Amino acid sequence: MTLSQRLKETDWIDVILWLFRAVIIILIVVGIVRKLFFGAGVAYSTKDWLDFITSGLSQGGLYALIALGYTMVYGVLFMINFAHGEFFMSGAMTSAILVGATLDSTGFLDSQPLISIILLIFVSVLTSMVVALLTERIAYRPLRRAPRLVPLITAIGASFFWQNLFRGFFGSAVKPYPVPESLEGRVNIMGFDFLKVRIVVLIASIIALIALYLFVQKTRTGKAIRAVAEDKDVATLMGIDVDRTIAITFAVGAFMAGIAAVLWGMTFKQVNFTMGFVPGIKAFTAAVLGGIGSIPGAALGGFFLGLIEAVGPPLILEGLNLPGVHQLKDVIAFTLLVLVLIFRPQGILGEKMAEKKA
Amino acid sequence: MSILELDNVHAYYGKIHALKGVSLRVEQGEIVTLIGGNGAGKTTTLRTICALMRPTVGSVIFEGEDLSRYKPSALASRGIAMVPEGRGVFAKMTVLENLEMGAFHRKDKEIDADIERIYDLFPRLRERRTQLAGTMSGGEQQMLAMGRAMMSRPHLLLLDEPSMGLAPVLVEAIFSTIVDINKQGTTVLLVEQNALMSLEIANRGYVLQTGEIVLSDDARALKQNEMIQKVYLGIE
Image (cartoon, rainbow over all chains, first blue to last red; front, side):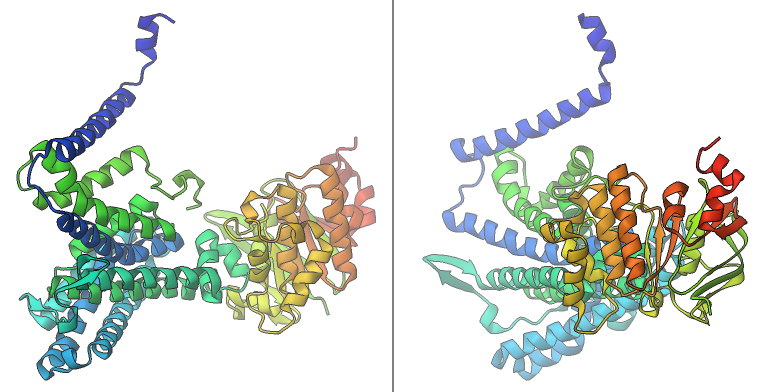
């Protein structure tokens, strides 16, 4: 084949994409090499690196918990529920303001931390589930047979609705989230110092993820959710009430978001009516990253995103001599989303969209 | 009393008038076949019986009860099971899980015993019980779909083109299993394009053309019918 023939048959979009990919890979490699071998940027101690990694993983656990709601709802409805971040916000705000403030002022929080956390989680989960079920019943179910764009726009509308409703309830000021004294400070594990709250959040989110996985795999209700995700008509033939199962799926996603809300509150110590937006978008990114529709994918995507957000700036961006790298973690997260959408739209564990029955 | 009776059923598939007054009866213990070409309304008829679609006019009476009173998901426990077109197994579930889904509405303690009975009927399924259903061959998936339908202990089994896409030797096996299932007391309504095979095992048959029943008779008489021979059996 002559050169001119070869040029004619080249798809220029592919060439640009290949160049793009090459540039990204070169930037990453150059950044890491300059950082590790030529000491570019700030010199971090081992403790600093361990902090980056643990905070990244615990943040990732939170993303994973929220991402489950996106991925499970997508699994049964093929719909991106953009109001999911508000399910998370509603749990965080209600538990902080209705229960947390009292627990804190009476001193019960510090004297009985475990009972207090269980109480906070109970209130948070309950609120998230009620908000989710109301949203599903009022805003989504009547539109089940509408074109796909319609529920998407409704979801954005529902999101605004809940944000402003909670602003009406609790005001627009930033409120503190109560943290028991025993979770403050650092803990020494095998000779290394870790932030206590990060370790607790990481362990709690892993336990919640495993529990959810077992629920979906082993229980009757979990199997019904999987059956509805695969084929609604056949699920109906098996005697599964599809509408009820979809509502349960929303409730389960909201349950995980409610747990994440308390853990998030304890990590960042404050709540606000807008707090659901960024975690929601990040968790959605994590779900897409792992392969939307896949539960292990959501978990993997969450941890991966959290880790790369925390470690990426010091490891890669500092090596490239960028200023203010720690402000750039959102840039990393959304660059990653764009890269995944371009190069592997089905995500890490997802299957090709074409195989899905819409 | 007939186990199933459709009376003047009209149904729309989107804007298409798919069923134009279909009336048919299935008696207790029979195998009845519904034959017809592509787009004749065979699948629509079955979907209407299972309440996945509702008739706009007419009624579906099952064991003396009008099915419009029931939610679609209640029909499995009411005694109707369907093997859908293209088998409809849950591809990402194991063979065992698929069979368990068939017994989803049941609360009795004999489910495990029934799974063993299905394994005896289809030994291949026992070998593959931990395998994901989507990784099996078409014939195995057909067996699984039939086994799953039997797990609900149906009074009436609806089969939508069980022979589709299968090798002739497998079709023979599937059809002889249908006869076995029927002998054990399950009434069967069989929808087929393969008229030759289905008239072979059926007691009676109906011929559906563009949403209307154009002919109904004993299976033996239908096989002798000139129009059937020409259009569906390919005999000149």
